[in-house]
Length: 319
Ligand SMILES: Nc1ncnc2c1ncn2[C@@H]1O[C@H](COP(=O)(O)OP(=O)(O)OP(=O)(O)O)[C@@H](O)[C@H]1O
Image (tube, rainbow, N blue to C red):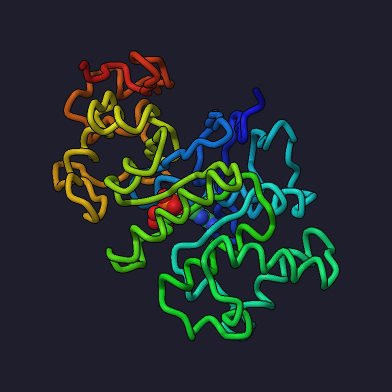
């Protein structure tokens, strides 16, 4: 069966110029070559500290950033940054802050119509029908269409964000912190809606969040990123309960409480390495309690560590 999403050796380096006349060229390797597949209907959680490359990965997947290397395929179709509409028809991005992600000067109807005009060149009658159907699916009242974004609560605005993403009839939606700006009481409603829509429209989700408890609850599998690389991937019920990479364990130990933000506990060398001057070997070695000499010289790659779990570590934790 064709995967919903397949990335191979996908990487992004930002060139930075410094010095007199920009002569000193350096690069930030925001995403190092990574490969993974997401089967249709899966929710893949993506976690990692600030700066680990989550946004850069997401922006490449929706065609907003051109990869430095590697390929992106959706349902077997290779995507090319020269054709941005092809990305838009297949994969949509839902932003964290529902109100500020909607253009304040446009009515909800204008906001909903934009992707239908741009991506499908739909005529008015067809657009109206499509918008009515989507509004019904996300339980929004038709009279909301004539209003402006600031007239809505966070939960309603996020439903509108979901509706806008769905209007394009994508196969995949990237949900970037979709509930973290919402009150806890509204979070569950939005998560339940997303779950129902996934089965109604046979969607595939990539779910980015700092909240490990939410990611664990909604994902089928979880990818853990560190310093631009995948350091662990596995089933949601295994990754935090039975972490194999010491970094995953650090995350799991530091965020056991629902809604607690993801920050590793204070310890010696608790900073991420300098992206302009990355260390040789494993990027986590300076923070890792299990690091040996080999870790400071060689870069580990993802290896199977039992079941469906993979970790990029020479000395993975055992069961
Ligand atoms: N346009 C850019 N130019 C140079 N460096 C960049 C650029 N965008 C991101 N970076 C760097 O790339 C790395 C990854 O950044 P990215 O924003 O993808 O991380 P993130 O995990 O999404 O962080 P956050 O959770 O804070 O959004 C960081 O070191 C960041 O400083």
